[in-house]
Amino acid sequence: MAPPVAVLLDTDIGTDVDDAIALALLLAAPEVDLRAVTTVSGDTELRARIARKLLNLGGRPDVPVAAGIREPVLRQRSFLWLGHEGRGIVEAQDAPLSSATHGVDLFIDRVLREHPHVVAIGPLSNVAVSIMKEPQVIAALPRLTIMGGALGRAPAVPTVEYNLGSDAEAAVVVFNAGLSLTLVPLDVTWRVFFTTAELRRLRTSGSHFVQTLCDAIDIWAPIQRGFFEMRPGFDRDIVAFLHDPLTVAVQIDPSLVTMQRIALRAAIVDGAFCLREEAGAPEMDVAVDVDAPRFVDFVIDRLLRLP
Image 1: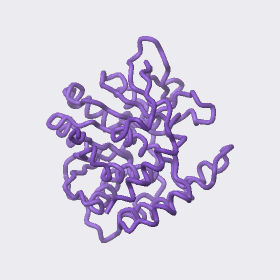
Image 2: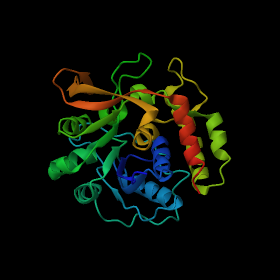
Image 3: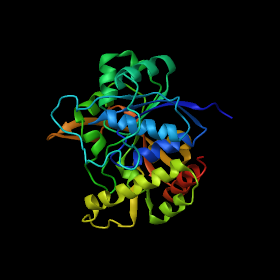
Image 4: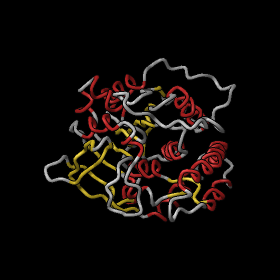
């Protein structure tokens, strides 16, 4: 059996519940060894406290957590903050985050010393600033797997994606840095989700950690419906899209997705981030298809194994 793959998770955990599900999936996967968590976007201290609480519940208090970049790198955009962040997870009596290390410094330190695969499931501000602060990160980072972008291959998928679009300048820096990239775009993540049926299955768990996740899903589901219920074809039975868990799952079982090597040019056009298929552009591995039913069962099965 191959040794576990070292992973650093960079996340905007706390808004969409899928970040918390992704973190739980990492903890339920013996195939990976989570080495650190860095948070990005808005109140990164609160996001770090959310990650810290979930790691403690999941039996991994040893994993360092650090709060990172709060604003887009050029301050020309704004990050999403809805006000429910932390509800159902962080309580008033919980201790504040004890780490004084900045997320960028933790990112640089772990990449240079331990060479983990980095999974970025939020805006790319921490990654971009780390590269600019310490260019040695580029050679030391074996692979960066990103949840983000939309290739426009599927007509039902939104053409604007939040993670890369919310700090487009940071995304352009990262995509043009010469890193080994894997991209898990909205084109495939839009096809994977939990419905109320999957939530009921999760509720059968005796794990306090899993029940906390379920509570967070209950809080998120009506917020999500408010965003998407007017979109044609949206199923109100969907309680959580699984964008970030699919990105994590690529590290655990790559057979869940179909990968294609694609040359993509990252650019900002009319103020919006976009990825264009272009000969001569940097090539990367891109998830272009997913076995959605098998993936959803995979996530449920792994989460139900959590103590």
